[in-house]
Length: 275
Length: 357
Image 1 (cartoon, rainbow over the protein chains, first blue to last red):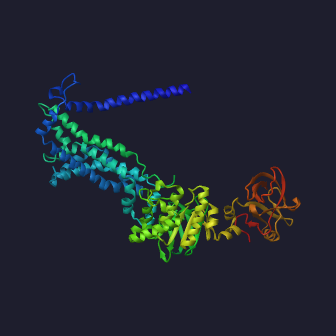
Image 2 (cartoon, rainbow over the protein chains, first blue to last red):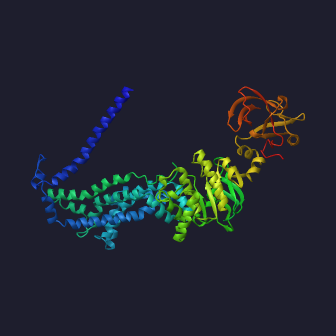
Image 3 (cartoon, helix red, strand yellow):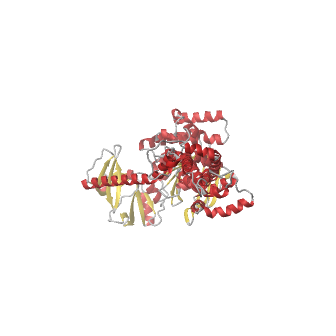
C-alpha cells in the first residue's frame, strides 16, 4: 500500500517535470520573440542575449512607418474571415450530413486533402487562377484557404453532431421537421460550442497559413504572414521589426486559442434525454 | 384521429428479417399496446408507423391514406420517446409549441393549446424552464404535452415509462390511461411490461419474432391465451407448465408419474389429444383440503406479499409457483396438497404450443 502511494507520488513528480520541460521548450521561442520585439535593435541579435534591457516601442513604430502593416493585417483578416466563413458554410451541412447518413467516406476524403502537402494543390490552383485572371485576388486566396478550414470544421463538428441523441432528431421529424430544418433549428443550436471551436481553429489555421498567400497573392492582397517573410533580406535583416511583426501576427491566434479552452466543455445537451 | 391498417408488412435489415409478414387493424380511438420480449419487433413496428423506418414490403394506411412513402413529418402523428427526446436548448413552452409553430398555427392558438395541455399534465409552473431543470417525471410529462398539443391523428408511445421509478411509473400509467379516455385518439403503446399492457390497453398485440401471437382484449389474452408463448408471457408470476399424458383414464405428469387432478372438461380434451402441456396460473392453484384430493408438493420457498403469498415448489421437474391466501403461511419443507381450480387450466399442443380447445 505504502509502495503504491510512493510510486504514485513519483509518477506525479515526473509528470510535473515533463510538463515544465515541455512548457519551456514550447514557450521559449515565443517569449524570446516577444522580448526581442521590445529591445533596441542593436540588442536583438546581441550574444549572449540580454535579459535586462530598457523596453522600447521603436521596432513597432519602425514597422508601421516602413511597411503597410495595417493593409497586410486587413488582407489577412479578409482572407481568414472569408475562408473561415466558407468553411463554416459548407462544413456545417457536410458534417451534419455525414453524421445523419453515417456515410463517412466524404469526411475521410476531406481529411486526406487536409493532410496532403499544400504544394499538391498550389500548382494546379496557380495554373487555374492564372488562366481566369484571379491571381492576386482575395477570392483566390479565400478559396485556397478553404482547403484548410473546411476539413477542420467538418472534423471538429462531426463528433458534436454524433453526440446528439438520435431520438431528438427523430422527435423533430415527427414534429414536422425535414432534414434542413432539423439542422438549423435543432442540431446547430446544440453544437453551438463546437461551431465556436471549429470557427476559432479554422481562423487560427488560416491566419497562420503561409504557402498559398506567398504564391497566390500580389502586393495589394499580401497577407501578414507572407509579408513578414519580406523582412528577411539577403543583405540585412531588420530583426527588431521582424520580431515586432511576428509578435503582432501571433497575437490574434494566441488570444483566440485561449478562448477555445472556455468553449470546449459544454453541458448544453444535459437534460435532453434520460439520466 | 384515424385508424391504422397494416397489410402484409415485411421489414428486413439486409438479409435479416425482423417482421416476416404482419397484418394488423387498429380502430379509430382505440388504445392498442404492443407487448413482447426484447427483439420481438414491437419498437420497429411502432417506428414504421411513425415513418422513422422504411417498409421493406407491404402497405401501411393511416386513416384512408397509404403512407408507405410519406415522411414522418407529413404523417400527422405524435410520438413519445423512451428517453423523452426533448429539445434541450428550448424552454418547456417552446418544446410544446414547436410542432404547432412549424405548421403555421396562429400564436394565440398555440398559446391556448400549450396552456391547456400544461394544465392537463400539471406542468404549468415549468413552462419557462429548460429540460435539464426538470425531474424525470416532469420531463416525461413535457414529452406527453408536446404530443398532446398537436391534436394528431394518432399517439405513439415507445416504452415511455421504462425510465421512471416504480411509484412514478404507476402514477404516469394511470395518467396516460385517463388521457386516452379524455382525448379519444388512437393510441399505440409499446412496452415489454405486461402489467402496463394489461392495465392500459383496449386490445393487446402480443409479438414474438415479428409475428403476432395474439391480438385481443386484455381479459381474453389473459383468460384464453392463444398459445403457450402468450400464456407464459402474460401474467405475473408466469403460468406454470407441466407435460402430461392421458393414461389409464388419468392425467399423468410425464416426469415423476404423479396424477394431476383436472376438471372433467379439461380431462376430456386431454383424452382426445393423448398428451399435452397443461398450463396453470399461480393464482389458479387451490389448496386441497385433503392431500389425497390434490397433488402433493414440498414447499421450497415462501414469499409473503401482504395481499397474497407465493409458494415456490418443484413439480415434475418444473420450478413452479402457487399464489395462495395470505393467511396461509406454510414453512419451507412443509408438504401441501394443491389442485388446479376447475375451469382454469389451459391445455396446449405439446409440439406446436397452440391451445387445445
